[in-house]
Length: 102
Image (cartoon, rainbow, N blue to C red):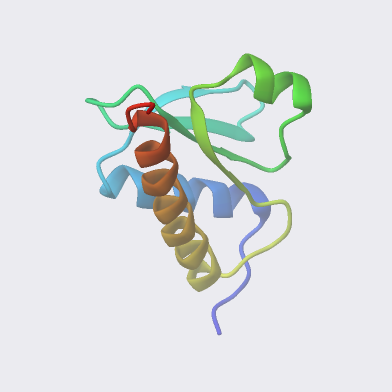
């Protein structure tokens, strides 16, 4: 098992993995503990952070399809698994949001 990364280092790794998957950094807060990434052709975001969003934040930012929260040390393998899960959630949520209403 690999050495645990601090939450901020794990977030940095998760961001790099998402960049490799075609996402681009759309925004990052000043503290460096929240990242917003999106694909260039897509209006939807993945949020990476060390804390969950509040109800007010969820209501205000409807463009975020998936949040990946890393709030404790994680190994690189664990971060990779979390990113893969976030990518699956993002794809499923995107299909649901973009499906025509019947």
